[in-house]
Length: 251
Image 1: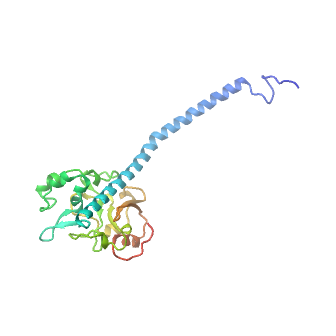
Image 2: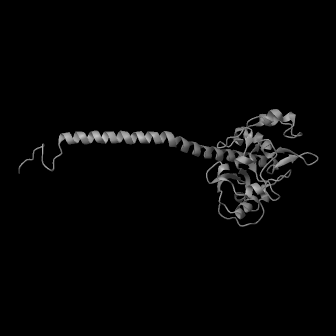
Image 3: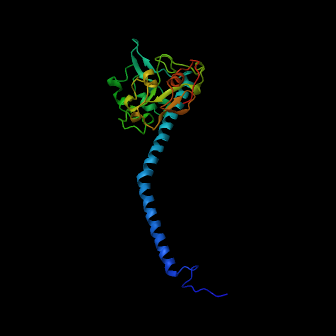
């Protein structure tokens, strides 16, 4: 059998060709590597930021839920949506009442609960930033919050009237306590202002949402669920009542 020369023949690749191919492959590799690096700089921080904000927002609501349940253990009920004075005027929000159960006893101790939240006597506390009430996806003043209780005539949290878990006959996993409201509905965290039925049930603009496609909600069992902005109004209404007996749809 004859031996083919390394310098020719259809089955033999010359040393020069190998070197050229290797050089071309290296260039290709470097170009691809450069493209990947550019994409990483442009895209990955945004992806990380979005996912990180979702996680932080979810954790904020979980802390609020835990504080709500500790409050229930101490007082035998969830807090009212807000306290009132002798004339029925709102004084202080549930967000103020659960401060001691979120390691903010110092802030709580500065508040005069007998005077309205916006009274000069409560100015120092009112200007205090409570990190758990800040949605990380929202560009608002740090004393503003979008974590609002759902307060309707038939909601779980009621004005000046506490509610026990035993009263939630629809099931704690089917009853919303707190919603993540749109940005245009933010309130001072200390204010006794929350979400009414209109805000809860009306369609939400994507421009006002903190997360693409929907928002987080805290349920009475302490869980935090993401509810799509396309959820049926009837389903949302059933989730706001603790003892309505409605059939809960998908969300």
